Length: 354
Image (cartoon, rainbow, N blue to C red; front, side):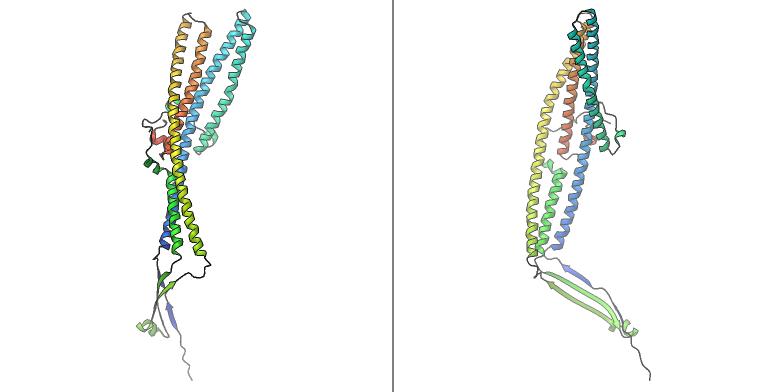
């Protein structure tokens, strides 16, 4: 007796399904992720702008310190020359021993300030090298202070709309939008979801049935799901994201207010810097003219050498004060452009020359 074997031939394809997002859970979740990406991008931009500003300020500080060191070196040279002159006159009996000692003390005190200033200059140059991604021994040489200048169009007031380009404000705004979408997605999870699914395949007990229209297998269905047994977790999650959204709104307002405060403080500092710079330049010009006049009269024999020495010391002191005033004005100008969201400060606005 012969036995006939039967095989079931079946191939079933994976089902396809589509979930209708009637209440926006998926859309809000995707938007929240997109805003989080924007937030990270703006935060990276803010870091780049801060780095550019720090490089500019380090460049300014290096130039100011170099000018200050040069002025103090001249002061020390004048003081040493005065001490030598008084020591020679003491031997001739024209000045007292106390006057010679006082000149020696003054020269020594001035000379004692130079090592600290030189150390500050090296520290600033090392910091500048690190900001540029170099090792301290590869620090660039300080630029001459005369090569640094402020842009011609420095604003004395800033429109509020202009502050919207600041990356910290844009990042805070993106974070607020992300929190709003997360709150919307959490609320949508409380509502039912509707899903359509379909599947198609072929099957049969023999190859002819499998390949014929009778071997087709398909199914279509719809599913409605409603969260029921979550123990209030979804409602608590909704309240959590709603409160996070409120917190992000407060953070955004605080960021905007801090931006206004930053700009207002910088503008006030710039106004004070401009006045101080004008007076320092006035004093330096007067001291320079006095030095020239005194030097000419000394060469004609109308004034003693001590008068020429005193005029030279006054000019070098005024020169150091002018360098500090110019540095403060330049640094606050760089801070103003950063507070307005402008970058790169140095290249775009010509804050310093290459």
